[in-house]
Length: 271
Ligand SMILES: [Zn+2]
Image (cartoon, rainbow, N blue to C red; front, side, top):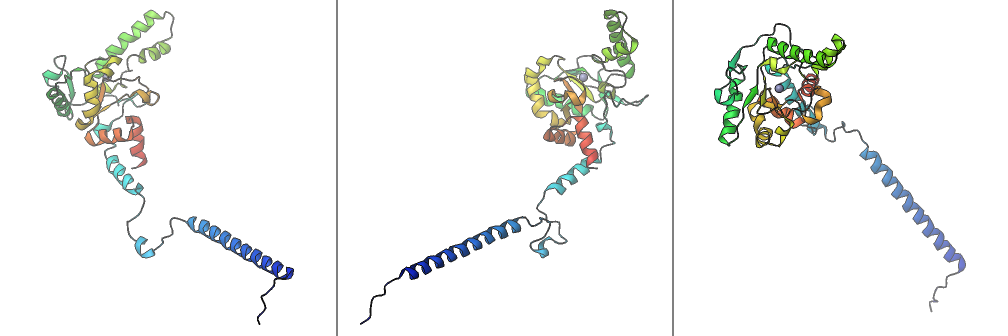
């Protein structure tokens, strides 16, 4: 007759030892798995998993090269008339001449107001489109010849001198330039800038401004001196001042949330 097996203390200790060894083995295996998976995850991205897919083809996972290509195409316009940058640091070259054309009388406050000949149609079309939406856009300042800017500046300079007896010529000029751009540094001399309706900050709260915010880009215009870019443009927020840059550039600048200074730098970097 078979006897039922009885476990001795020695047997039990043997089993416990075996279980402990198994557990240790499992632990070592688990740790090895974790280490291996971390190492694999860190594998350089440039190493193709399947060389036949990656090598020699343009099918890449990154979209950056496509973006650069687009910017490079836009950068071809860097030297074009529509992207000329005029500010205190980059004045217009002396004797800069442009051909201007009168703005359609319905959209100009004063007779004879003119704009760069190459962009005047865009301005007229924008005003006409606004009119269709029952929005009145009226140019109150547009192309300003250099001589006119000089007259405006001199008038301001005299006022500053009268208000500050004993002020030095240099200081007076600096002070005057905070109100009226120094001749050669006003975008209005370029013939591509227009002030619309009112030169008051409250213009921001009008339906005209709302319309412009939505559609000006479609006609190649941008809000030239945005609220949050004062440190870069050097000009206070001017909700009324619009600059023609062309449709493609206007849309790109808005998409990138860049003012003209930033946009020109961006194009130069991607040239
Ligand atoms: Zn202006």
